[in-house]
Figure (cartoon, one colour):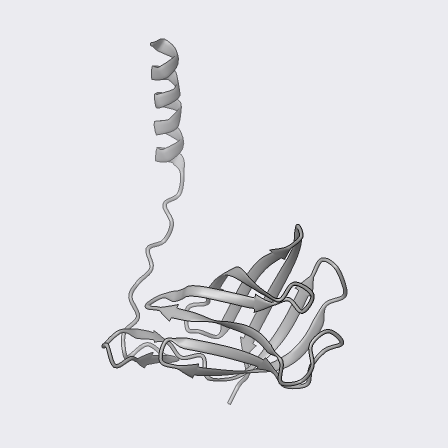
Length: 148
């Protein structure tokens, strides 16, 4: 019984000392780089040109410009120039948006095809990051919105 109490006390101390994650504030129609869907939901607006850094463990970092097209809450990004692994016009990232970021995001890894990823959109929607793995190897994408 003392062992269980000790574990509970340690657990409570760790929870009390831990930092709570910052709550996500809902987007509003006044938030920059957002769009209001027909449902009334406000999501980030990703349409436009983005600088891409594609950084896999397996080979050298690649860079390109990606054009993202968004229809409602769904989006897809295509390479403008292409790399040695994916040609110009090839899809690189796609997914579905919700009020504060991604409901789902996928990365085209060329050799591994479309892979589910974890992703984050920065406050203000000027940077997108996505991470996935193929056969235990990390693949990271960083997209930065190009200035208009």
